[in-house]
Length: 454
Image 1 (cartoon, rainbow, N blue to C red):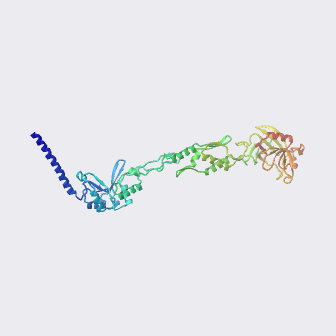
Image 2 (image 1 turned 180 degrees about the vertical axis):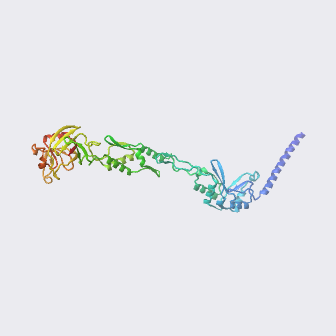
Image 3 (image 1 turned 90 degrees about the vertical axis):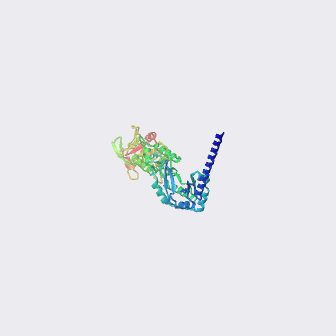
């Protein structure tokens, strides 16, 4: 029983001693810290631990050791920016902050972080940027937008670690003016790609590029072809300011080049005759003559729709076939010297006939050259008395050039054809045939059949 009393008395005595020590510590601490900040206090990014209000104001106004904390890839950088900042605080507002500290802040030396908006503050942003650039590690990669290279391949965007100092300095300045903490993750202030490979606009352009690359516009010239494909189109495609552009001027040049290569209209030809060997023939209305304007329009239309197609050019005028020999092997051969006509079908001579051609004068001669049948009519009248001086009925009319000349029967000649009749009693340029020969030829020829006159 005696032992229990002693134990109880000891505990009571020990407890009282502990309380006395706590009270003594608090009283002495309170006396020491009276009018001061607690032992571990930060006010508006300035260490004011155990300072009086006046000392704290002086230190804050001098921006002593004024620093910001920056985090980059889990590494922390503390940067003194006091040379770039000036602030003004007054005693009343600082004292008010000191009064807000609690008993336990003093007793347990707790970390205290307080924010106070200064009366005024100035930030030299140019100087601040210089300090940050000197203190932070160098940029390892720069942010870049997604883009299409010269071959129109899509290059993905790059997220670099280059800092957007405009945004960072603005945020720091705002926080200084507000008295906020100055701790930042640099990754939040990296320059950001404005154009990304995943953007809808980029995907649309990439789809257009693929459509162009898969295009084939093929023009046929008999057995020969000319194709506008990716190798040609890609030269004139460009990506700029977010848009895919296709130059247009090259199309005219491309068509012009095709025309020079394949046009035969007005060209001189070599022709193997029935009786006189190979002769050179100039002119005539037959020949390939490309309509460049309309052909260009067709190409532009297909390109605008990104549509492939195999087609022929648009022509002003055509010939019997493509190739070096555009006359083919079905034609009417007319020898003015012999006053004789032959008709060949697929290389085989079908008929032959004498005729009377135009009087060999400048205004009435039958025009030489390679022409073609561009019309067929039965029972019609040729000429007028007022203009041509005649008004004559024919049974078979087959015009072959644009000067009003053609093949037709001439019953008024009473069966007299061939020889030298044309020299004194020639036509006005037409080729006059016996009625039966005109009927046969009318049956054989078609619109477009070449008429070779030499």
